[in-house]
Length: 72
Image 1 (cartoon, rainbow, N blue to C red):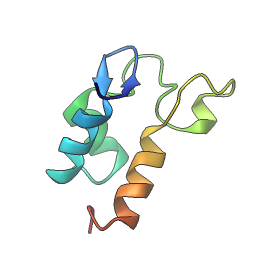
Image 2: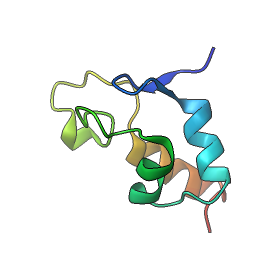
Image 3: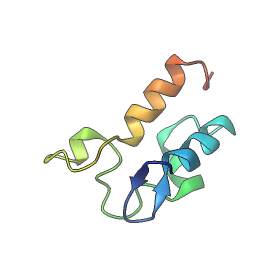
């Protein structure tokens, strides 16, 4: 079972990674293609999640994907 990144929209880490592998290498494109971050927004970045309620955030996933060479 994949980690649910966006609780509001039910978007999993697997869905986020699929979008990134298909070219969604910036935050706006990732949000558009997956709907992640379109609800409460706490999954977007740690700054949007002041109480640390989300396990991982879109900005962190994108940063890691770039380090791994998934985004050029």
